[in-house]
Structure formats: structure tokens, C-alpha cells
Length: 335
Image (cartoon, rainbow, N blue to C red):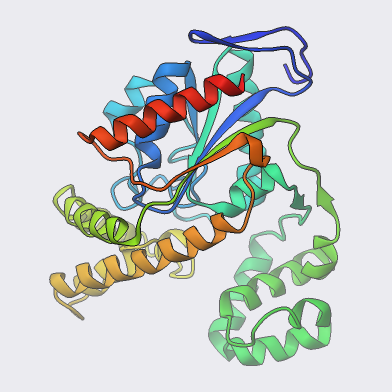
């Protein structure tokens, strides 16, 4: 229970009395080995892994989002994976609520919450707080998407300037997704996004310990290429076929997951499979660069409670074994 003052034991080690319970963050770019590290920590420290990746929440994308395998999920408890249908748009706010509920339940069961993923805004919603923007509702979302399709981003932005200038001035006129988001908030709540963002939920009352993976770029590029090839062998094309069969709005987040637009183009006959694979690995690599930059400029925990590993965690690697051992030691010594 949050606020408990008695020691808590996790596996072979014990957290001393504290005002706030402890949670571990394992963060880094796509294909850096976060899941492997989190799994090793969870096995050693009696932990439960809590998903902090905005794409791995979707039920329909186990392969293309590299969700943990069924075997890995059987090794230690995993929470918040595959909980949202592709037909819905997940949000930072809904994930934060679910994550806090999960963390409290994990802690109450005497286990250590280990949050892992590559979505920086998810972590920030816990460690820095979050703007209290209410859900504008499906009607406002549908209206915004329809308007964006009908008149385009620039014209929609011009309309936003008239009704919510404070938000409009923060958004580039060609950024259709952000313009539509701002419009739906204004339409559905009667207040602009900038106004809502002035009201923030506080940081979560937890003591965070953070491990950040920051591998060399060449290692990531190689890992991304090998992983996408493995995804194709594991059924990624069939996964996209099933997704397309639902006739979903292409603006939904699940429809824009890395690999989905590229394999969709292949299935339509617009490009061959080799080109789809090339494009998917390229956009994923570009995304990992943005992720790494974000994590370098945002604290995941207090400096003394954070370590950075400049290597990729992979299977059958002595370097990875050493990094895992160092991570375990770091968490244990923080207790």
C-alpha cells in the first residue's frame, strides 16, 4: 500500500521503510533489448513487468510491435500488453490510469513493478505529471478526422486560429495529426488544448529507479533489420491482412504502427516485399533516433537513481550478461 512504512521484500532483497513504494523503469529505443533486460530483472527480483509502450497496448499487433512471446509471459507476470483493440485510439492519460492501478496491485502482492517500453511520454506522465485533458469523446474525434480529410491541415489550422489561437500558435499548419487533436479537444470539451495543459496531474507518488539503454546506432540498425525479417517469418503479413479486413480508419494509431503502412502498400500491390521491408526498417531506424534523443534530454528518475547502458541487450552475449548483472546490482544497491 502506498505510504506503508514497513520493509518490503522482493525476492532475495529488501526495500527499507519508505514513504513511497519503489518501481523500476527500463527505457530506451526500439530494438535496444529492453524486454530482455526487464525479463531478467523480473526473474531475479520477483518483479512484474508493466508495459510502457504505446504500440504494444494493441491487441491486434503482437508480431509487428514485438510484444513479449507467450513463453516470456509465462516466465513472469506481464501487464497492459494487448489490452486495447486497434479500433480504439489509446492515450497517455488512459495508460497512466491503468499503469498506476497495475503498479498498486503489483506492490500489494509483494512484487516489484518494472515498467518497460520506448514511449517517453508514458514515463513522463508518471515522473513529471500530466495535463488533465478530458476525453473529448468519439463524436468530436470523428468530426475532427472528417474535417481534416475534407479541407486539409492548413485550412483546418486556419479555423483553429479563430477558435483556439493559443493552441494553434504552438502547432505547425501542416501537422495534420496535431491540428486534428487540438480541434477535437476544443470541439468536445469547449476549451482549448493549451488551456487544459495549464492544469496538470501531479507526478506519481513512487520512488523510481531507472535504467536507460542507449546502444550505438549501428547496433540498432542491424537489430532492426534482423528483427523485421524475423517478423515477416513470424506472420507479420497475415497480421496486417487481418487488420485491413476490419476496415479501420487509417488515422488510428494502430494503422500507423511501423510496418503496417509498408506491408499494406505491399498487399495492395503498390510495392514489392523487399521495398516494404526496406521502408519499414528505415522508418523504424528514424524513430529510434528520435527516441534516443528524447531519453537523453528527459530524466526518468533522480540522477543518483539512474544508470545508462551504452550497449544493446541481446541473447547469448557475454556483454549483455554483464550489463544485466550490473543492472541487478544497481537496483539492489539502491534498496
